[in-house]
Image 1 (tube, rainbow, N blue to C red):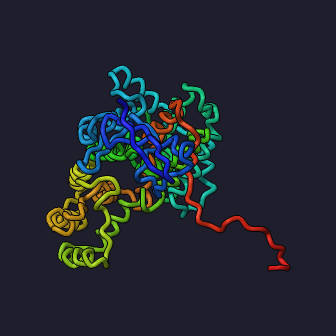
Image 2 (image 1 turned 120 degrees about the horizontal axis):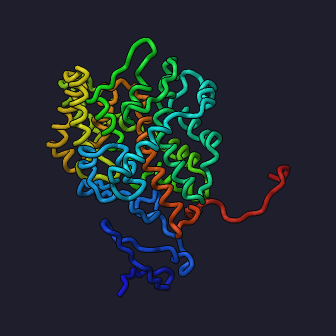
Image 3 (image 1 turned 90 degrees about the vertical axis):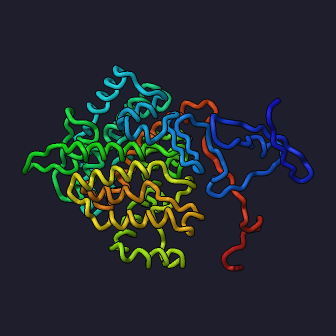
Length: 426
């Protein structure tokens, strides 16, 4: 017998189906609630609402679990590559050797952008924020690649997915180079995805550039850790924009705009700023007391979803140490502050009770700084990595026969109906 939930409203009882997924909480299907009972549900921020059915990513915040298509994030970060994770998110299974070779070729050989896109960058001020440039540049891609904007054509959907994954590093590197007043660097097909990106960011015509395998691996791992994270604000934005039938480039640009918010993609920059503000290990006790007294904000700890240790944080911590050692900054005072602060937070009853465990942003800011990126580029790198998650979620939504245009409801608390009064009688 099918499970149901009963809701009583104004003396009327309504039975609603209960749905269960592979894992996670049961879901009450309220699609017919308005029609049967003439009521809406009220859920600001949609924190108790499942907006869709998805097979891509699963999070158990209480247990600190993050799975992509069933595979734990720590296994993917240690054993896989970003492009293999891209294939997994898009297609649902890990590729065979032949499938991966073809997929990798499709991405690597599409990393160049239309030459006129470079002229588009010249329209921005040199001091424009890189995320502002990314919003404009990605949105403009639909004007340059309109041959893959028919969302009803499966082949065009896949071509646009490949183009976005391939060209996002090129656009991100150009945004970085433009802010530095340096010439744009073209991609090289013999390099890996991460190597190509680092070269486009940091090479200059005056000298040869050679990839550092430690830094390239760390960059690739950072991409994996940020590839997808279920129905967060930016992903929900992409799905909502896509539900109207908007082209994929416009939808990803909308996701980038949402990610730009400091409550979403800017957390690692905030965590780095906090460590800089503390400065030295001897100032940590004063800072911790300030957090307890609510005089200081603790950034990089706790998570909207995770009520346990963020599974990405452990991998990010390891990458952080490897990068600092590779670039000769293992004595970085910010890392010393970070390690001591983490130790205190994991053992202090105040933090333990509130489940304020380190999240991925806690170490990623230090790592990205050591790689050579300024804070204003942190969210751009997040957007680069998350593009595959956004496009996989968008593609899944488009191919879902039950999907409808998004139309949240509201609880209206404004004035009741009233008559217009002419200006001379007010």
